[in-house]
Structure formats: C-alpha cells, structure tokens
Length: 613
Figure 1 (tube, helix red, strand yellow):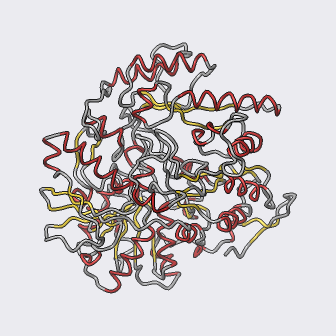
Figure 2: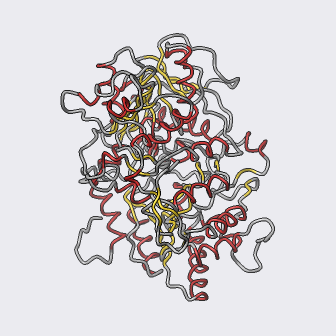
C-alpha cells in the first residue's frame, strides 16, 4: 500500500511513511489531470463535498469513494466547489457515466456555520487553514440545483448527515420554520440516509444495468419523491403513513405525531417504509439495510486503502483542523443505544451498535503507527459512546420486537449484554502493539453502565460484567489528564426530558473516580458536560444546577446552549411545545435573552457580568 518509507529514531524502529514520496494516484482524483494520469476519459461517479478531501475513514466522502472504488468504479472527488462564480468547478471533471453523489460534508452545514445563538462562525474545521466561506448554507440544495442545471440528464444522489436528517418534513431552527424533505427542495433523484456504503454501491450497480434512476427505488435505505403510484414495498411490513407536510404546517400536533412514528420505526430492527404526502408528490423512505451483527460490513469500510492524509493539493494551505483533531484516534464502532433526546447518532447511524473486529482495529493501528505525525499516543480509542463496543442484545429475537428508543433509560434493559470484557481485552492488545506508548479514551463514556457495579459488595459479577475492572483500567491508563462524561443536567425533571439517568449516578461515579485517583496517586479530572435551555429546563432548574456543580467544586467550561437540530426528540419538543408521545405541553425557552440567562448560570465565577461563552 505504501511503497516509500523512512526509518524513524523511535525506540520501536517502525518504518514511517513519507507522504511526499506517495504517488498522486494513492488518492482519488480531484482534477481532470489526475483522471488522465490514470488513463480515464470519464469518471463513473463524481462525489461533490462541502469538505476538503481528506483520505481517512473518519471523513464520509473518502469512505464512500473508497467503497465505490473497491466495487470496481472510477470515482473522482469534487471538494468544496466554488458556487459563486461562473460554476467552472462543477464542469472541470466533466460528466460522470453513472451519477453525481452530493454531500454537505461530515457536519451539518448550519451547525458548521452558526452558533447556537445564530451568529456566523469565523472558522471551518473541515477547510484548510480553518478558513470559513468555502461552502454555502445547505450545500446539499445548492450543489444539487447547480448540477441539475448543468447536467439535467445525470442522476444526483444526495447523502451525508445534512440530507439524512432532512429526509422528511423537519423543523429548521435557523429559519424558524418547517421545511419539506430535501428531496423537494434540492431536486435530487434519490436521497441516501444513514451510513451510505451499502446503498450507494447498489445504486451504482442498478444504474450500470439500467440507466433509469427510477429503477433504484426498491433499494433499502433510499428515499425518493414520486408522483406516480407507489411501487410494491420492498418489505412485508405495512407502510407507515405520516401526516402530510401541509397538515404539519397547519397543526403542530401532526408534526409531533410524525416524529413519534418515525423514531419508533427507526428503533425497530424491521419496519415498513415511511410515506409522506406533499404538494410536490409523495416522499418515500425505504427501510434500512439489515444490521450486520458480525461487523463484516463495517470492517470492509475501515479496511480500505486510505492514505490517512489530506490530498496533496492542500499542502501549502494550512492544516485542516478536523483532521488534526482525529488523526491519532481510531473508531471502534458505529451506532448508539443510549437514545438521548438531543442526539442524532441513533437516527443516522442506528440504535444497534455495529462493532469492528479486533483484527480490523489492530490492522488500522499498525498503519497509524507508521504515519509521520504519530508519536506513539493514541488520542482516542472509542466511538459515539466510548464503552459500547461489542455490546448487543443477549436474545436477538427480543431485540427484533423491541421499539425502545434507549437500552439504558429509564433503566438498563435486562436483555442488554453490557459486559466490558471484550473492550477491555482490546485495550490491552492495542497497548501491547509496537510503537504504542499510551492509549487514551477521548470519547465520552457512559458511566450509567458502570455505576450499578462499582460498589464493593454490590451487584457486580466479575464473570459477567467487568465494570470495576474496566473503570480502573480507564482511570489508571486511559486518561490523559481529563476524562469526559456527560450528565447533561442535575435536575430530575430535565433529565427525564433528556432521557438521561439521575444526577446521583454522576456523583457516585465521581466519588469512585476521585477515590481511585487518590489511591493511585493520579492528578486527574473528571470533566462533565452540561446543556442549558433544553426543553423542560427553566431558569430555576439552571440555578439549581449552578448550586449543585458549585458545591462539587466545578467551574464549568464544557457546556453548550441547546441547539435544535433536525430529527431529534428535543427539537420536535422545542418546536411543537409538545411531548410527541403524549402530546402533553412541555415548556421550552425560546426567548434569546432568557436562553442566554440560563447559560450564564454555568459561568457564575466569571467576573464580567453577562459573560457569553
């Protein structure tokens, strides 16, 4: 894979990769000249992205490109095209043989561009030099409309986190209104939601057989807009019919009920397709691909021949902050069964955790150890929640019938196998690899899977859980000074809205953490994350949070003002003022000044009045 290497003075004497010696063909082509160098007259598929092109498994456009390349297709990448000028960027790679794939990037463009107070950000972590202004608001819409204008006969497939979370009628916080599916607003032929490796390959194969994009409508995990009679459903389960977009505009209860239906369907291992009428036709959302419990699909994705480096075109344009942040980290799994009300992970990656094999993880770390920027310290060996690796239901048949949004709230599901032994053994194997000095857990851990087993003489059974052993290992060896956890609030009524466990569990975990640090002579911090102005949270709740955290000795920094993002329970509650499941009223603070006042409770120790984070 890497033909050129330099010797390092590292004690393990691992050969390091010399990026300057890598042939340009090691990356997917981003220019006509690079295509010609490969002998291509035309690409099969062109991927358009709002991010700079970093050839690394943490960047979605690289993953999709490499997956399609592995399937035998000629794939080119058009990163951050200029949409303001004569649109020459959109023409420079020519017309793809099969389709354009469009993504806003690894992050929602509006979260990327604006703060929770709707102020324009001055930087962009996915652009060289961290410079802002290299992508429009809602790139999924902007790029697709341009491509449809220039190449009206070429199918456009939208994907990525921005499109995924906007596949049906959704609330847009930045415009403070309901918007229809991005299929309507963008004009895309298809929308792929969730992790898109499987559906994009199937789309390519179908278009190879038949150029009519309408024949792709049977593919799982694909959404489309149609004015025709619905084709037969790809699954035996009954269709889930939502209130129309127009009904939702008239009645917030319709929007609330829609969310409850969609989330319930998303949490099932098997469900019917979702259908929503609009003035432009019907939006149809096919069920997802079945979960792969053995992890073969996720291994294939991570084992592709990434260079793990930004494209050489960015060499003199400054570092890409998002890459710098994650380049020494390794992702172990996808999905999250925590079901937090404000989080989009399960809606995008799924509730079922899909874990990589040990072989795949160790292979990636051996590759990472050869990179010129790696100095022996793994900054994170984790995932959406660091300690969910390898966890699933004990009885899969029970999971197949379950629609619970969370396997942890209001209590740990008795069918959940949350033994930490497999993860602990992986940590130890990674730490023993040549070139590895330290293994840190940078992702947040779910302490609510540990606390019930931490007390001596408590419920722990060493043969079935290993919670104490895991917690001790992390505290002693996996903390680089600070360990992240996310209690999110202190008050029971707010935590209930968040689907989070009582704050007493955090206090108990903090006692264990502090006591173990003292016993081992470690000077380390437990860093809690909190949210202000979440639905259900009042000024009195924030004042109580202030007093409790102050009493614990915290001067909080890791905090955020609640930002409504599409397709979360908290966002639907914020917009509708209702609990989507009961349709009972729920207080949400909308006034900007009072939202800021809630946030000020975090910073009581700041001298300047009216401090803003």
